[in-house]
Amino acid sequence: MRRATNPPAALALLLGVATFPGGCSERAAPDEAATGEERAGPTFAPRLAEFRALEAKGTPAPDEETLANLDELVGVAFSDVGDASLSRRAEARLERHEQRGFAFEDGLKHEDPAVRAQCAWRLGEMGRVAAIPVLFWRLRYEIDNTVRLWMVDALSRLGTDAHVDVLIELLDDGRTAEGAAEVALRLARAAGEEVGDDPSWDDVKELVARIRDRWRATGLPAGRDPIELDPELEARLAGCVADLTEYQLRLVDYARTALTGVGALPLPLLRRSLSAEEFYLRFHSIEVVRDIGRPAASLGDALLPLLEDPPCRVVAMEALGEIGYAPAEAPLRAALADPDPEVRVAAAGALGPLGAPGAVEDLRRILADEGADLDLRVRAAFSLALLEGGGDGLLFLAERRRAEDYHAPTLNELLDRVRSAVDEG
Image (spheres, rainbow, N blue to C red):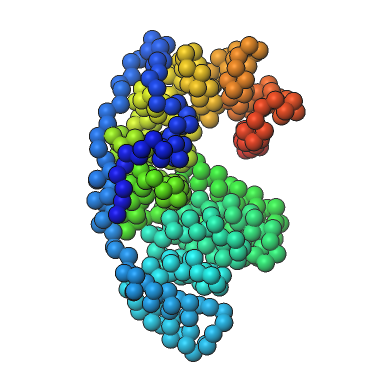
């Protein structure tokens, strides 16, 4: 049974709501005159029930007894150790079972890596797109590289390139290098890339990086048909959106992982959840949109009103920057003068990812102001470095790392992102 969606204060602290960027206090809105237009405030409506209703349209999972029997068949059929004749009979029974997809998904957590690998391969072979969220989640925690390779292979066959970075790691493992190269070259040929007769390992890694970058920009598989949103996958994604309201952090984490691994498919669902009356549903949906990035650019018009939603204002700024929604430039620049320091920092950090060359002089003034808060100067430097391809912003960030006067993990993350953008440029 699911719990109510309004947690008490103690649970809110566990979820980190007390430390959410932007907090829950009322804030002054940016100067409307500075934006050149007056923005409409957000309108909210109850959404959770409609997502649960859509989730309920999916095929129910097998009951515990049936699933236990299927799990036993999976273990017998695919384990490396056992009677070959018995394994063949178990496999034949599985192939005839109408709920074998659930069995293969459950088999991804089997203790035997050989079983996990076989289950991943079979999910890809049967074209079970509803399994993408499960595969993506299990891939995140899988430690056996051979199993990871088959999971990557299955995901690629099902139509998502959100996982392809894993191939770069697998190319460096002697046990999986050949298989990873085969998958990478298959994807590259499908994408129309020039592969050549004898590509080097570095060539293959570069091909993988280009496929990755294309996915991040479009949410579409390179050179292949987009993922088909069948009713089963839609029901699962609706359940994931609804689970953004849950107290169990693992459920929320799973939901966010699933929703960011299928490209543009969840965008219609997220458009509705961005206007959810339920706070956690709304807030976490903004974070998911931020994490999806450029493929979610069409949701900019739904995000923009949330700049007038005090508890969500800061994360909405981050999301508008990450999706590259150009109409957000004016309100973000106006927010550089907001009385709330968190808002100023968020605005400064969002203008670079947004791609707002008109903000360069504003950012330079902040960077040059030695009396300004260091958080603000660091974020201004980050955005300036993105907009100028390095320059003074990059130098400032590098100097902070040398001086060790700012949070090192944050600096490393910002520097890595700037350098990656410079390399791609």
